[in-house]
Amino acid sequence: MLKKAFCLCCLLFLSNAPFAANRNASSPENIVRNFYHDYLTAWNMPDVKEGLKKSHQAVDTYTTKHLKILGNANNSGTDYFTHSQDICPEWENNINTKEISINSHVAAYRVDLGYGKSMSSFTVHLIKQHKRWMLDSVEFDGRESGICNQ
View: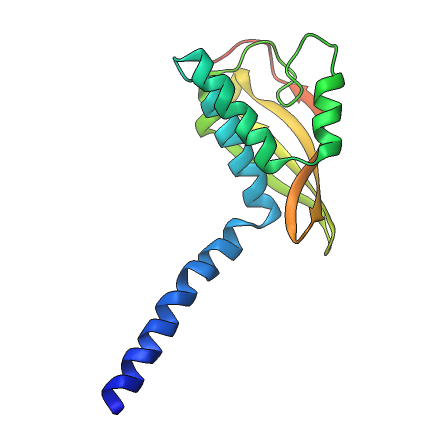
């Protein structure tokens, strides 16, 4: 009997371990990081067709309908999420975030992509929609230069 109780406790503990990890992965900060990582990784893929598919998946997974409309209405000639025509390869692995504000339904983060000459900064606003944090707008704050480091 004691052996069965121990096994049951172990199973309950192990079954809750992924839940705890997933809950942390769904924080607004991690959503911002995951979006930009997935999005930039897609744009840096050698297979352009596959990269385009993956970038659309990132947008579909992490953004609200409102943000999709804003992105599609962008006529600036630059990418809505990076405010650039070219994606610097080093952005993919250099994503820094800083919380600006957060409450139970809205959050704002500063996002810095890259470093040195290639660093670009954004303010990303998120909303909680159906118990999930989703990017709702991206504001371009500035860029060190138009040059990539690599």
